[in-house]
Length: 226
Ligand code: PGA
Image (cartoon, rainbow, N blue to C red; front, side, top):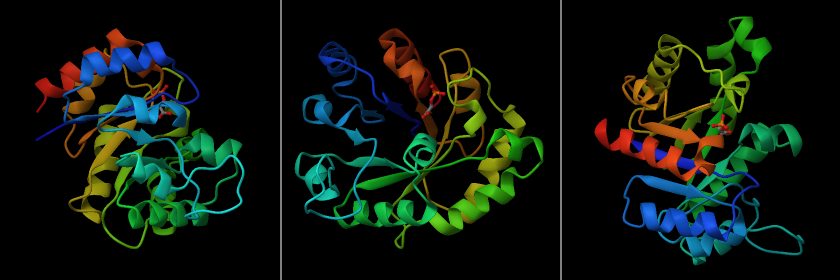
């Protein structure tokens, strides 16, 4: 099975990194690059946005719609990343509307879900994920889900293989046929272990995606795991 690598640059990157990605992954069918909006056109095939406005157009200075993204060839969009939820106060309801807006423009929303550290320590992980899924999933089935525990993002900490496996088993049972990613401190060191977990179809990579040699290593491991 194909293993996906989704690179989330967040508010980072440069023309130089765009060039390095084009050289390294120009022909890749399983790597999706999510640079800041301004680089999407240049990055070429398999471009993913990090965010989208929920309306198709209008007087919303500084915003970008799914229609606009689709016109320049964007195929995927992260929706509901925890940083959007935390810093931009995005609610489950808004995330659902954004996911629907993506689908209307034939963009696959990659919906991010995950529990906080307090919820994790309290044994609430599955309960939190079920609630987020109930509230965030769009109306039609063309979407992906990324499980990203908040406490694993950018911290160097990850759940155990068993914990990821349990979550992804639950996700697969409730969402058959949906591409399921794991994200949170994925690196060249832990990627092969994560690719080997049942029901993990790929990874969402933040920090390590800014280091071209690290992301190349992760991509090579994805192809080995196919
Ligand atoms: P990280 O970020 O790989 O730096 O932990 C992942 C993400 O936020 O998508």
